[in-house]
Length: 414
Ligand code: 7TS
Image (cartoon, rainbow, N blue to C red; front, top):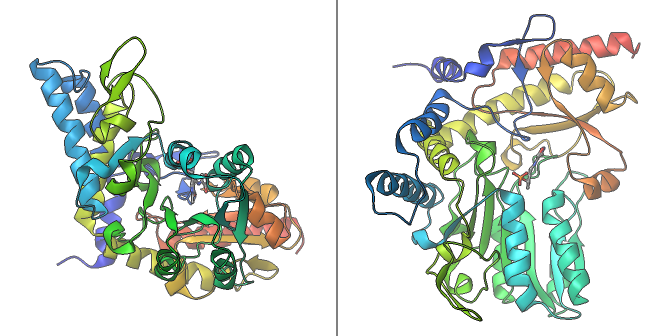
């Protein structure tokens, strides 16, 4: 039997991009997985095979290719449903990504269900895509947007939630399961049970969770759930919105056009069955197929194995980084409450300078506000540096990160 370490080394061989060098012949160390992940051969080949052998439009024609393309597309829907433990496949809607999923809810659910003075509650550590759609909606409706605050450990202050729920005006509470900057794993169970008790709907942004740990949507008990394919080895431009069927049935369409209709007359239209009512136009068929291959790949490894690998890497990195003089790490030290994302600042060196210097060593990390400016304001910083890990990363790569940070320290005489 192979050791866990050995099997993770084999995983790297599936990712052609990890073999390339960057800058001055430096081995690529890719530590920006919270932005997007690299793609294994299995995903690249599935997309290639789709275009070479099966390409046709779906749900329309009766010829062989159209049947094959439709079957591949729908098979991916089953894979998604299985992966996040959704019993009813018609609740799984293909969208472009988490951003589109949340906008769909804000538009198609929010516009019919929110009125003046109602409240939407989000959190201080959300990505802009879980803030701006709610700003647009509440502004249009004369409603309010409120925030669950955060303590200095990067954990949500659930007293704020109680306070807003007590007003009786909250219509939706929305939060990310894992923060893309701090890595905090939200206490979803408590938040959702409080909301349920108050008769309030919940939306969970799973963009940074589904790629990294077992997520069981049925067990979570939320009403809306969103995530992106490209952060879990899949292609860009494909994501998922899951909505509880009883809610989905009451919602008007988001986009009008082909495939989402049953009958169109000059002045009226009836809608297609779920989920097609919410998938207007020719969808991103090839990338749905690619996402299916990504799900197969992750399932073969096992989400619990992936989570353990990230716990090992993150503990190792937190330990090494905390030994670097002048480096400030954000978020909780409790590994059971955080994913494989580490944001930090290095003395008063600007994060862009840190990222640029270590890029010369072939190391890719992100610097900036990470589309979380509300959080940056809360942390009282303009930006952070962020390293984020995935299945193909190794402890040697973390050592390389530490060495390159030591170079930053030498340059800036820290
Ligand atoms: N929600 C969270 C928690 C995210 O991390 C991201 C993307 C999104 C939503 C939006 O996903 P998209 O696929 O629709 O773009 N996060 C990041 C990031 O941290 N760096 O680049 C993108």
